[in-house]
Length: 304
Image (cartoon, rainbow, N blue to C red; front, side):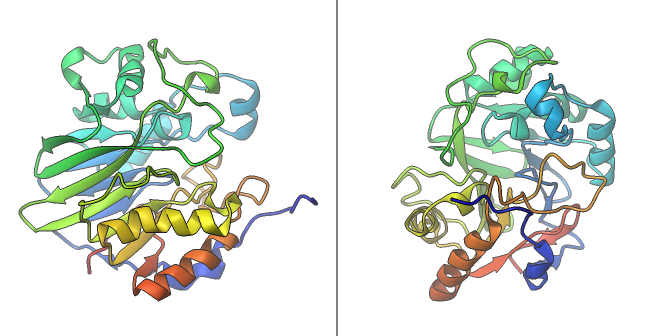
């Protein structure tokens, strides 16, 4: 099989960057990969908080560590000073590398399984700043109600398994094993709004049965190298299962490129966004679901 060179042109989907701006009230801000700021003006949650985005040569050959300057620049650009919680969707480096630093900077609680806790401990977060949760856990975090449901990473998982010892950077990328992967259902009781954050393009059949979310933020990293049947099953077990009327695609951007530069899609060597969009566009049309991309650093209202 011949290797396809280059990368998909994200401008091909310019009409999908169609979310309405949020001037006040409840909003979601996309910050690259699966990092989302969910805030209502009084309280705020963040998934992942990954801003260092080290280059590919360092990831493959060197040791990686959070970059304080890049983290501070991203938090400042997103106008984030305080968070109620930081919740990594799983603990690969492109999700959890900076999570403990972001929690420390913002006063947020670091929430996840034992693998997330190991990253927090390695950074030196005190025990009362780390919340270890189990499958099905429900939490009240500021003005939000959050349900953590065990999920799977999209195949292939290059660094499977749990993290059992504190991670002290700089370290090899392999130290950031996948750990516990989550489907995160966020409810906002005061507005009645809800959303699903599916950070990785994996799923557990039936895990979201009985859950409801109006909007699904859908991780599509590596989805483009899966079969059409897998993509259909993924859509059914996430978007269709929770009854979402809009799917917003995340984890499509090249996370080896800093946020100071325009986002671009991952190369064909690792993913195929065009294949993903062909299948998802068909499924969205069949189900009457709006299919959108978020704009980085834009405070948006996906429920509009």
